[in-house]
Length: 160
Image (cartoon, rainbow, N blue to C red):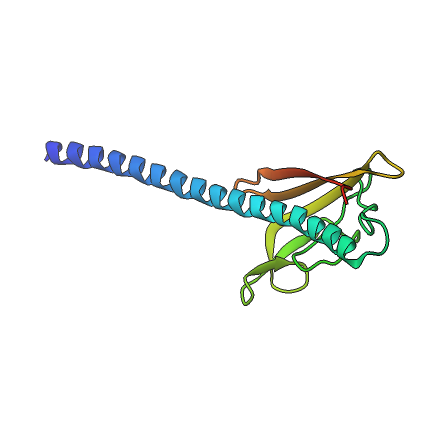
């Protein structure tokens, strides 16, 4: 009888260890998934700015950086979404929404996610810039209430 109790205790302790490792593995998988989503959302923020620059060039009128000069890091930044034709300075740190029907992230429709994206655009040199420094920051709160963020930076030049 005593041997059976000791064997049962050892098995229980072993199972608790396995469940603990399994729980930590699932948590790490969720953090990894959120990081991947954040990197892609950050890259999308930079791509939207690039699309606006390309649209400025194709229109043939106005400055190469038209509409992109009011998002400097001295302010609160701007927000953009996949179909933006310009940047928006109102509530740049609003939560992104996920639309399950279109499978797209944006601000107008869908359910709130944990992600916030802020894009800052600084002209270098100030005044009449010949390049733009674009920083896309995506932040979120992890399951352990830890604030996490991904910061991507790119530079665009007035080469045209």
